Image (cartoon, rainbow, N blue to C red; front, side):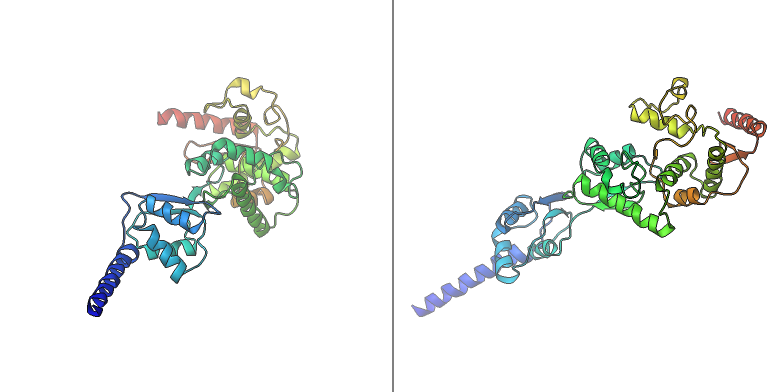
Length: 328
């Protein structure tokens, strides 16, 4: 009788050991790349069941046993990505460590807030409209730097970001503004921030050539100092974007529009930034080259020709048109 009981105990122990090996140590590969969102406040049982239903672990019970008996530590909420074979123990350790999946958002220099909103939406972090609302409603984030700011345009610093789905749009814009503040401190931008960022945003949109940025800035500074209209096409385009009318072209009617962003019609800088400048353009706006240039035009080869007089500029425009015609 005792021998029979002993055998049954041995069999039971072996069965439990096999079950534990199956449930805890045997890796499981999801059928496809799987994303699992674990919400704040979920119980460990809820998390275990969610992981099992998603095909990430073999047994919710084995997960719970391992958690409560061996590793009763906090499991961190967030979105997790599963695309490789992992045991339940490995999955548990990832949740303890908070190995949360980050959605990469790349914001190139010169993106305006509409472009940034589209990039955030494309990364699966929320809608474009919600981002734009946050960029308008959270303007207090920069009021100490720019009391005249109406939106966060200009302060959504271009960079590569990693965001989680648990972060709100407010969190996202706050991180971008924080990155701007870091760069502003690094280059010594402490005063006249509104003017500097506005000028830098125009410079950013006018040229992507690093060595040209101080020259472009010098043209606009010279025109500002002599009361000459900036005639900046990017500001006219921005006016159309604000009205939801931009289709990739600038029309004569837009050059005559009474928008404060129309720098053909209104001398001086526009009311605020028209894009989000990078560090180099901010530095160029702070330290423009010392020139007597008042004009510039594309050379149709990625660079610009600069001129001191309207006559020189007219010749450069003719050269540009010839270059365009020759390239067709």
